[in-house]
Image 1 (cartoon, one colour):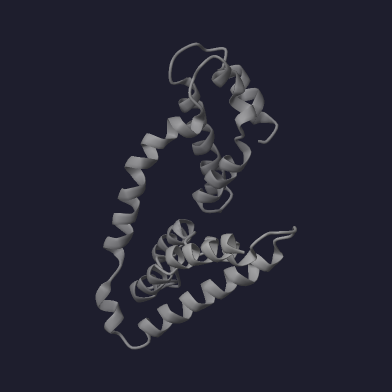
Image 2 (spheres, rainbow, N blue to C red):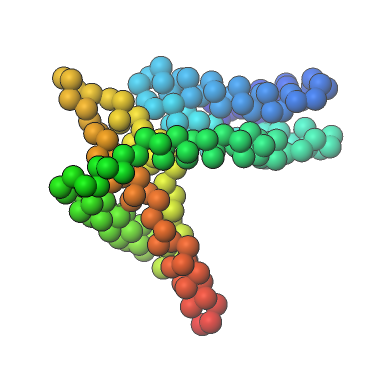
Length: 195
């Protein structure tokens, strides 16, 4: 697909109709999502792959003739759909589950493990003068993909048993939506710039 993408966008740039870049970009994303689903992966894996493949250079012909880049064209769509996604995930979160024994403890354990894992991963950043602590803290709020996979897990079952029950989903949502990152990142960047 990496080699097909530039040829596809180059061919599409021959069409002079407005909206061609957005249509081809979305079609490419939906195609890879469908292919991921066909081979048994989550659709988001295909969409993620499309995002990795699509570079500015692939649709340079469109931008050179005065059209806006693909990121700008997609922004109104994401501005509309992203809040709906988060509202739906919030609606699926059962706040009553936190009264069940162990759910709050699971949420705290998952949050601690997520924070520690991202801080440990930041040690792998190579280079001189890099603030690894800020990199680790900056990775903390990256959770929308986790919410998507948790939502997929909520729908899956093995031998009639759910893989993720609503109580576990609630704990996962709390872990992903931790509010620690913004103040911690502000503190870390302030500390880093003061040095």
